[in-house]
Amino acid sequence: MTMLKELVRDSMELSGADKRVVVEAVNLAVRYGNRYAIKNINLQIERNRITAIIGPSGCGKSTLLRCINRMNDLIPEAKVEGRVLYRGVDIYSKEIDPVMVRTVIGMVFQRPNPFPMSIFDNVSFGLKVNGIKLSKTELMQKVRDALEKAALWDEVKDRLDAHAYSLSGGQQQRLCIARTLAVDPEVILLDEPTVSLDPISTAKIEQLLRNISSNYTIVIVTHNMQQAARVSDYTAVMMPDENMVGGLIEFGPTKEIFTHPRDKRTEDYISGRVG
Amino acid sequence: MADTVLGLGWQESRRVRWKKTLDKVAPILLSFGLFIGIATVASLLITVATTGGDRLSWTLITEYPHPNPANAGMRSAILGTIWTVGLSALICVPLGIAAALYLTAWSENKVIKRFIEINIANLAGIPSVVFGLVGLSLLTYGLGLGRSIIAGAFTLAVMTLPLVTVAAAEAVKTIPEALIHGAYSLGATKLQVTRYIILPRALPMMMTGAILAISRAIGEAAPILVISGLLFIRQDPSSIFDRFTVMPLQIYNWVSRPQVAFQELSSAAIIVLMLILLSMNSAAIALRYRYQRRLTL
Image (cartoon, rainbow over all chains, first blue to last red; front, side, top):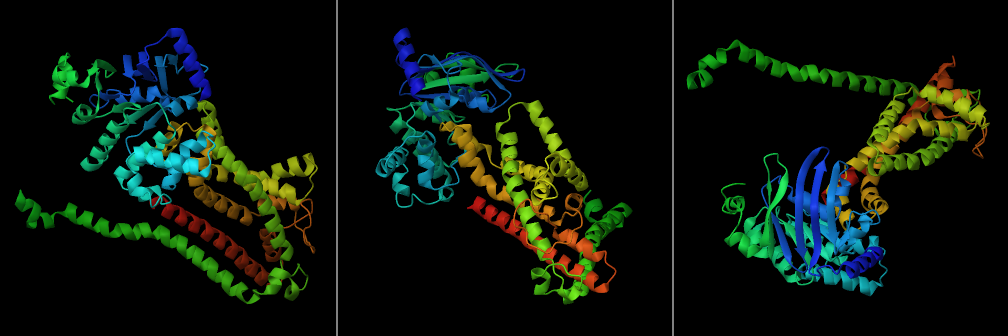
């Protein structure tokens, strides 16, 4: 973790990179075997903003998201080409350990996947595996902070020792967000986080994302265009081409994308004519 | 149309009647296989219980073998089994779990992984007497361990290793990928994911597989016969380099005697052996049950 941060500082001094850009994809492509899933992706993620990635099923949104914290490493057939820069440092270069990347760039998944342990242990899991030594009160404070940011504290403060599976689906997903926040990452990736939740739980998660967005850089993949319009500052639109290879067709401030789309395909997609 | 489906035409169709008959006959045919299995086990149990039931006594468990059937017991065989199988479990369970973890969570070269997996499956199909012969030449003579408990334990361990490995690998495969990815996304290393996510969840199922493999080792006579020979032992084992005998061999020994009393003794010994195996299998089932309950919590 320190190594990545040192590397980051060095390269920022050298390049004088645009400090507002935290994550940048340069000519990014991913292939599974010989078949490309996404190709020619160039994208800049701005600091402390929410960027939504929208597009029809199978256009490679999740694949792109998983590139940003090297989760694609876990899929043996996936090959990543091009570069992903975190503050100017290529996270795919040889000297970078993917484990370090994931402590700085966290992830929340489609379906809530709390660990089969207590609520408290779920939130402190990241601190434990990252070898962060804390006193009992400090640890408690960290867990409480994370749960408060994830808008879950009031609901679970009396039963932190309860099993995580005793929570509802929406609570479980907020627990997963709290778990990610506890590691104190700079970037949080969310892969369709509300797709399995009811509207009320969804609204809670959208609200909490807005609340924490002043301190975190958030990238959210979503199927739901209203959600993208509600929560995001920037929107990236992906679309598969005739060979089913996903590409980025439009990127810009969310308002513009939804009111004045430049690309005909974006307009069709947003207005519900395709996808 | 409705007439042909619901009306008389439908009932009279021969094809439909034939199908209905088949439907009634099928369970009878299928349950026949089940019946044969249950009948065999039942007749075995009844035979053993009726011939050996009267011979069940504490003498059988606490006394050494004796030329006089009234005083004969299988103390040395029970102790030999505990020592040999216990030691082999200590060897094969950690090794099998380690091998399974390597295969499922660590090995990255697909070709090598596949090669190892196929060979482990092959290993599980090798007749047990072959393991005994390998143990005899490699451990007893090659390494000079003699006809000792440790030689028998290693032989049984190698024999049960593939069973434990396959069961443990299956256990790892039941763990949802979402949990593993969740741990990785928090910056856990491979070892931490294995330690905190995979092992705690897979362990009960791994132990279930291990218990079943060990209970197979308890009932195994052939490899031990090759290594230890048929022995008449009248003392407790005191070190792993002692000579030994096991329960199946004691049973074999008694059953091959001409006297009726020894035949009855062997039936009694079979009851003891089966009780031990049954209780181990129950333990495995109990473990699995507890594991399933924890999953649905």
